[in-house]
Amino acid sequence: METSTIISTAIKLHYITDLNSYVLDEEGSLLQRQELVQLPLFMHETRDAAFKTLSTMRENQVYILHNEWDLQFFGYALRGNGVKWCILLGPFYEKAPDFFKISREHHLSRTESEELRNVANKISILTGEKIKSFTSVLQQFRSLMEKTAPVVIDYSHKQERNVSQTTKEEINQIELVELRYKIEKDFVRAVETGNKKQALQLINSNNLLFSFAERFPNQPIRRVKNNLIVLNTLLRTAARKGQVASILVHRISEDYALKIEQVDQLGMLYQIEDQMIGDYCDLVQSHSLKQYSIIIQKVIEHITSYYDQQINIENLAEQNEINVSHLSRKFKQETGYTITGFHQMLRINQAKFLLETENLSIEDISWMVGYDDPSYFTRVFKKETGMTPTQFRK
Image (tube, rainbow, N blue to C red; front, side, top):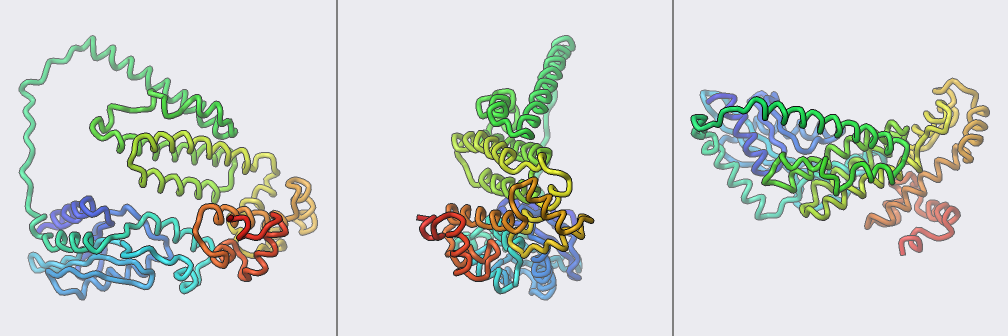
């Protein structure tokens, strides 16, 4: 039994189930991985524990492994040529997880809790019927290992190449590529400066220059999704060039990556394209740090990244080799906020966003934005907005 055969079959299972697949030897050493979802570092230990469990499993029997994060994995072991091989598929959920409960139990920071939520939204929730189906597929692992017949392509009727015609086509193709790159360069510059109107004029859902119809001609939805993934990367790079805090760029990028994969209608995908361009430009307009000095940029980036934690002004001053009073004065002069006021503004803005978009309790939102006391959070929120969180949500 060849190692390559085991691995190629595990990859087949990955494509059949849309779950991560892993191949290990009986010592628990990882030989191959095929991942759609990458677990955050603080969850690797529990995944590795599932790896170790595999080596103790009986052969030719499917197991469902559970862990303390509410994640589940399919496990299967088989023997060939005197060697034991272990296959792991997952993670998946059987029901939607309680993020607040899990975050509390594992003492996650707010940043880790948000990372958990982003990753968990990409993990499949399998119905009982799907679990049974995937179990049946995994039990057929040996059958899946059977070799498929090689495909023979007959080139005997291939037309002779017209050199002059091909040369013309190649020249046209070069000109087209150069035009695309010029437009792309101007587009990145427009997003970098927050110029929404120009960005949408250069690249939008009606621009056939970027439709790439030759790719996946029989799979238009997959083609548009691939284009959107590339566009999301381009926009993320442009926003960082516009000096938007990395955590804000990461959040919008993750949000759109999830939306792109969830939508399966061409009309809605085209709407996402134009909306995504507009939202990145708005982000640059409202959060670019270009107008601030280097020191204040660093301080804002730090506060934005750790808005849910307590801010120590003395540590910020020490990290930037500046006097505390000078830093406080300079920050107020450039931003119009005190450091504490800016920190509180970020927390309240995030709370507003969660109240508008998530069906979470006030206590959960209070904890997620950094307030351990929901009553104190409510008082601060009302002072800043003129209404309680409940009134704001209504």
